[in-house]
Length: 221
Length: 221
Image 1 (cartoon, each protein chain N blue to C red):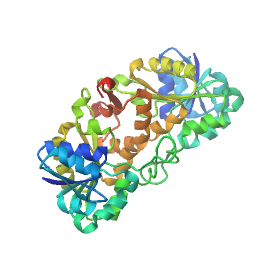
Image 2 (cartoon, one colour):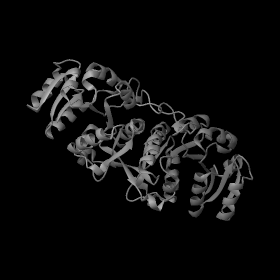
Image 3 (cartoon, each protein chain N blue to C red):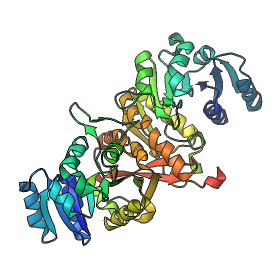
Image 4 (cartoon, helix red, strand yellow):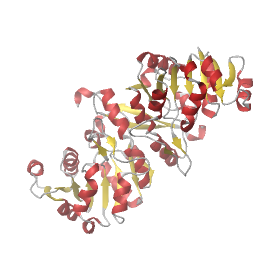
């Protein structure tokens, strides 16, 4: 599949690289078409990798990943352009973290979420929020951690969530590890995991961990 | 140990009952000294159970549980009275959920938490936030769920956290299931689990689940 990855930082490059390994053709996009960091990635990744502007990348992909920093994601998506995004599946794994003072806090939460803001700004885009609750090394290699652990999914479009689930499979996720929380407003819940994620990273001294939802038998309740 | 449980609702009664089973002597407290719900609980629980006002309960306990509804906890603690709370360990398992419109939202979060508000209002009370991220049936019977799952703990006083860990043991928690996140501000993280907890309850159709933090080996990171 032709996939556009918006964002050429650590997360964008790691996701894009893993998608290429899984057989997809990937363009990574930034504000400029000649980003040196992106050029180095393209050079090292091979013929299935290209780079372009946000707009080039939105045009290229039949499915788009939002790997930009959450507080600038809406700007990046506006640069990508509504015309080239319309009707497409957008997998949003950004979190609206404001890192301007000490330990990051969410720029907004509780009664709103980044995923909802994106969905509202681009009503025909099929936004799926997922992968935003773990370190990128775990995102692209769930086997890094022992046993079962969970990846959450939120979105209004069931077909888009089915496609996203297949893409998660390409990244190494077992289908039984996916919990579909419901519509896009449920992304409030996953974005609000970031504060405890940051504190767990502090308490554990590293970021090689993930949430797992342990479920009992409801009939016994 | 003499334990005071503030709150005579489902959570207060369940915690108090389990503490009596574990050998503690427990008073449950409400606004009035002759609460009929509390009287029924005392009657059915036996000689180690009594009831009183919030103030009676704070005076009685050498350790206090806050099992009141999060949005009224500060009022209840003020009724309990600073004099009788000072220097004691307060285990706070409330969440500041505002249920006034549809699915509850947090009354405040992100840059603040109920645990911090309590700690600020009662500076000499040794507040430990724990148990606030699961259904009460799981709180008092962790074996209800299969395998490993996690109970978080936040607080400024290491000795108070040690005592709280022993009390968690009395409720059935293995010590290795406890993650000490750090100081009381880390309670922001656990209180902010409530939005996803509520949505998981919706997606799963029941509340018999819990979070588990799956940790990889940091040396390999």
